[in-house]
Length: 212
Image 1 (cartoon, one colour):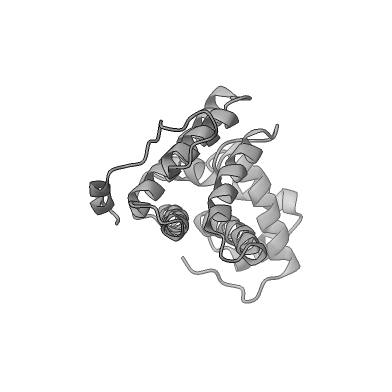
Image 2: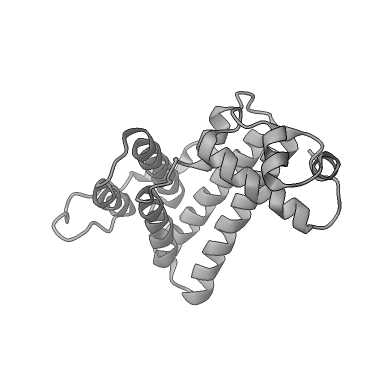
């Protein structure tokens, strides 16, 4: 879906900020275009000039979140060049920090994908691309640490991350972050003190899994 309207404008940003708040807090299907227009304080013509359809807005909402995630990782890499462990710490800490916030509603990508059943839909493609990006960044970091099965372990880390986010959202977990981080580092093969010898490091054969 192509966005029309040229360069970013204050009105477009206001629409996106409003949509982000409403979509994440309430859900995609529960929020209509008219509500976004009203709460963003823009004219209908302005809205549709930037977003010809609601699906275009949803794609842009996710793309904005993707950009934020990529910028955050870029800052970590810039501050800690040549330190792949920092990348793993970033992705782990990000989840623990977000799950502890009162406004936490789960993963915006998982939540949105659940409302779009067609796997070929542009919204689902944004979600799939973002998850693939996370997997690649985790695999790169694991490779930098000399892990014997970086790709398969990256996939398992993403599964763990997603599962913890969903469980935190559904069950209101308030003290599971320590267990999450323990499982995370066990998969990495760098268990916390007291867990030495209990590694969940996958076998070499896992490197040939789908997507690798």
